[in-house]
Figure 1 (cartoon, rainbow, N blue to C red):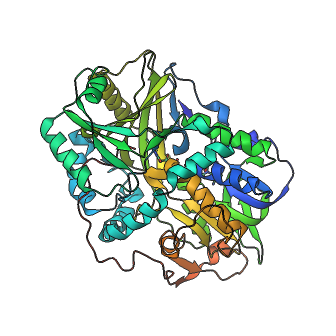
Figure 2 (cartoon, rainbow, N blue to C red; figure 1 turned 60 degrees about the vertical axis):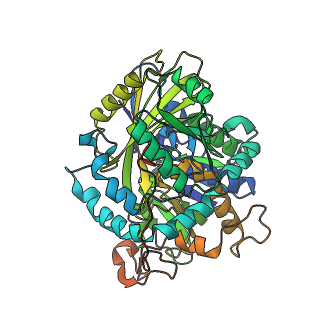
Figure 3 (tube, protein in one colour; figure 1 turned 90 degrees about the horizontal axis):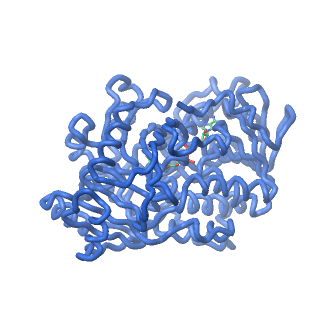
Length: 497
Ligand SMILES: Cc1cc2nc3c(=O)[nH]c(=O)nc-3n(C[C@H](O)[C@H](O)[C@H](O)COP(=O)(O)OP(=O)(O)OC[C@H]3O[C@@H](n4cnc5c(N)ncnc54)[C@H](O)[C@@H]3O)c2cc1C
């Protein structure tokens, strides 16, 4: 099994040497969110240093040789640009349907009972957040409304307009009754800028011809799409960033540092990095760094799994969502990837091979074309209790910014997140001259990184341990005023990705 080795990764330093490191902007985290932000900031001529503790880009194991692989979500996601998922999963319908989604009953939801401490406190907050699903829907709708255009803008900036395919996705059911219920639920649900069409007979026959058993029916979502290949997109971003003069350092950040008027980070290897601005985009790892600075970010690792293999066939279909199996199947070139599962556990706990076996059962039962061995992957979505991302400025350091907690939508929202941050970081007044539209102030307040509370710091030496005194949550704390209850969202709607 190949596991991202956090310690050894420090040796993959390609462009930066020296004991004292400095940059105008330091971006921590080389996932899709951090990379995109680093690239856009560099495109605005900022001196940007990207820090990441992951493996080198070329360490992604090839498909077809039976490799297992554990790594950040940005490498293993389903590639779906999910503009339709405007309802946060923190909603009453998800809670009510949770029992029948359980892994032991054949579903995709696994509550890690061996380590309840890893997620139970978070779950309590999530249940409270469900009371404000309507507000959450407004926030996600605003962010997702520009997600697809932002991906197109990024594709153009990279000189790769084909990196995004905007040809929708299909949702399929095999059981006729489940099909009727599922289709009705989706038609009644908010889907943002995405449209819904019933799959006509010819389209359904085209899908059925590629499966072992014909679906009873399905829907076509329009206005959604996919990234042509998430791994290639990750590599292209890094390459473009370096070619534009950005710097990359393979190193693990230990903590934020107290430093008076300055912004600074301590690395695990003992070095200190100083920066005019720091952007934390380290996925699940972001919460630990912020905790050291007194910012409460209740992040959970929502682990997911995929199988990937060569299909060896003609496969012209867009992403397929098999709703009853909570499974999404996406094509990346000559490969298919089947992704599923929401597993609550410690980020670094060993993968559960039963998930991969279940995925293989799905692949065989559906009769998907398989022309190679499987590559098996597991990684963790960074998820906050309200299922909204944290994007914006934190008051913990003089010029500290955060982009994390994108849960099931990190790929979808990465370019939009990066655009927002670039505009704000390069013009604190809100970038009046920004070429892209900015979200409304109430949206920015709802996704503020300090919304879960912050402790005042004494400023004394040894600052991380000197944290005291609860500071009140900022006015934008959407958890504080939750009164309304969510209306139903489609069953099995969102835990496939
Ligand atoms: C099975 C599955 C399917 C998914 N499908 C989709 C989909 O179809 N569409 C979609 O929009 N989203 C999808 N997602 C979610 C999406 O992949 C994530 O939201 C997104 O990748 C998060 O990106 P990120 O950059 O915030 O974090 P990550 O990808 O986790 O990257 C964080 C980076 O920070 C580094 N790091 C962490 N701590 C430190 C530290 N202390 N010092 C230095 N570096 C550090 C890590 O090594 C890593 O490289 C899926 C997720 C899963 C698991």
